[in-house]
Length: 130
Ligand SMILES: Cc1cc2nc3c(=O)[nH]c(=O)nc-3n(C[C@H](O)[C@H](O)[C@H](O)COP(=O)(O)OP(=O)(O)OC[C@H]3O[C@@H](n4cnc5c(N)ncnc54)[C@H](O)[C@@H]3O)c2cc1C
Image 1 (cartoon, rainbow, N blue to C red):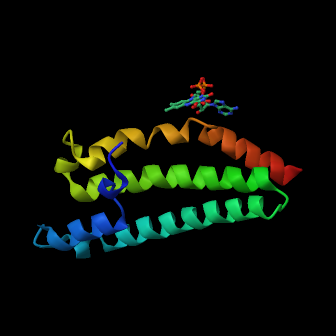
Image 2 (image 1 turned 120 degrees about the vertical axis):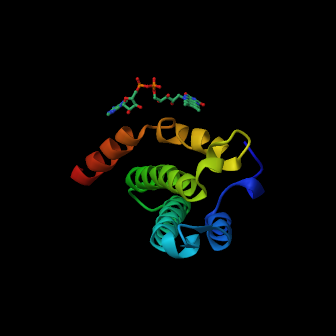
Image 3 (image 1 turned 60 degrees about the horizontal axis):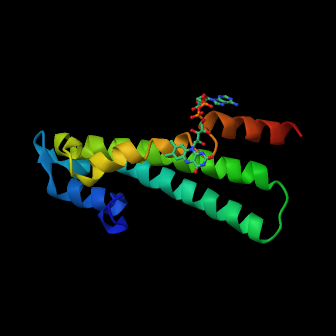
């Protein structure tokens, strides 16, 4: 994995969107809605992870449901955000050595290991029916 400082983040994409001009205008205007969506989903996933961790630390009930929801949203969001970041960066993002090219491959696995997305959904539904 590249060092965390090389990972794309909302900041990384914002910098690119600020600099880049395409189709007669700054990318920041063309991609504003997409960037807002990426930032909102990332924040929601982060809060769900913190909520699950806090519930575990304080001995709250329903840890299985909370942690399955956190894992589901965080891993699906990571995939969505990296895919959207590739779209914003365009063709160079797919060149070998570009951090996003690496992340595009790496981000796929967490939706499968430690419980695939479908398994997380099954756990959540089972806990809701309990
Ligand atoms: C990078 C990486 C690291 C890993 N590290 C570890 C590790 O450290 N320790 C470890 O034990 N394993 C590890 N694994 C294995 C991982 O846990 C399994 O890949 C995962 O459990 C899925 O099992 P499988 O690959 O055999 O696919 P299968 O069990 O054949 O599942 C294939 C697909 O079927 C669907 N599916 C499976 N079960 C259900 C279900 N109950 N309901 C609905 N749909 C379902 C999912 O979409 C799943 O992706 C790792 C895998 C990867 C990719």
